[in-house]
Figure 1 (cartoon, helix red, strand yellow):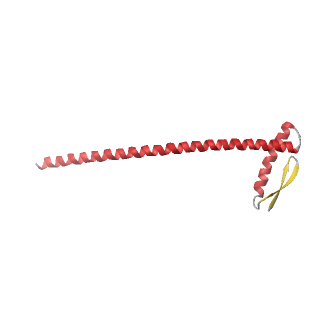
Figure 2: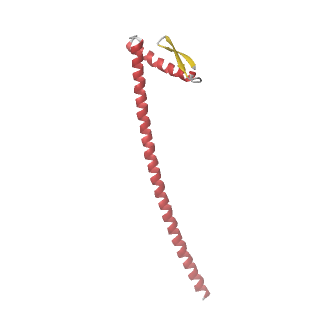
Length: 122
């Protein structure tokens, strides 16, 4: 098991983590420390526990907003995929209709060409 030392608000904390996750945990610790330090500048040194709680609430709020944004993007993507599928169905129907019209026109042209051949033969 790995260990990382994280500094938050001037204090070092030893944190255990899975082997290979040390750099990720250290990065998360740096982000948390940045939030705690920002809050300490705004409200003063009101104690580590309160600062940590406030930072955790700020991070939870950011996570909630990120989830909402992600859900909105997922809904837009689903709507877009549905619209694309409907557009593809319409394009397919138009292509089939155009192919049918071209086949009918080709049949009439062949019929006219045959009539012209018969008229020239006679």
